[in-house]
Amino acid sequence: MKIGFIGCGNMAQAIIGGIINSKLTSPENIIASDAYKPTREDAEKKFEIKTSADNLEVAKASDVIVLALKPQFYGDVIEEIKDSIREDALIITIAPGQTLEQVEELFGKEVKIVRTMPNTPALVGEGMTAMCPNKHTTDEDKKTAKSILESFGKCEEVPEYMMDTVTAISGSAPAYVFMMIEAMADGAVAKRMTRPLAYKMAAQAVLGSAKMVLESGKHPGELKDMVTSPGGTTAAAIRELEKQGFRSALIEALCVCQEKSEEL
Image (cartoon, rainbow, N blue to C red; front, side):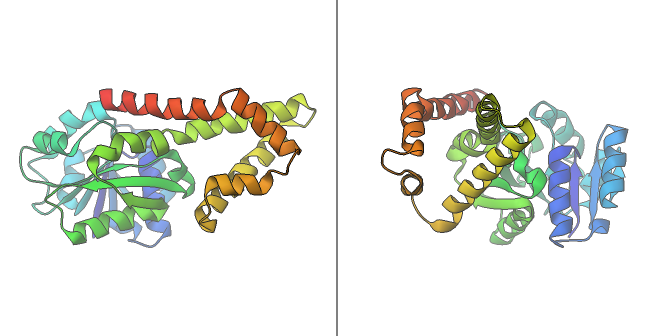
């Protein structure tokens, strides 16, 4: 299986790294194009893959084509490659706001497409990706796409109407978590902890808590209650968080994030 990337920036490189590390395919079966020479050179040096400035070279050579582009470039790039892709090529998109119908219209013909929404933890092999295949994909195509997407984290298939919600709960969520870690560290620094130690302790607390949710099967509220002793320090902290609107702020943030995604 030949896998091609049009665009080889950070997200593409996260996927390429996952594919190679998981031994899904070897570097010689991967090719990537990018208009920016330093980006191509970086990917070539890091992964020992073939790179090119020519999108058509990638399109002609690949069984699977990952469009790792910003949404505004989709029209021009698809116009360039649409007559050169293989008849049974599988197209994987990772741009927000680009629906299956819109992408198929850009190709102007029946094409097998899997729309995806990864997130930046893919860069450390802990991504969360939602995928949505179009009606032309086979079960084997879905299996291929999922194996690629699971090489750098976890993947779930969802109906397309959920993709804007995915943006809010997963795609943009790392920013919320980074802000929370930063704020937790600021509080610790205010109480005389060094900043590097504060970041480390806050980040590890978040990592461990997330792992407990994923692995224990328990409701987050139940896990919260396990930490919260009657009249204790955690109870006092949670009371203040509720008073300051912590829960409501997160709910509203996700809602406005989804609404913004729907506008794109």
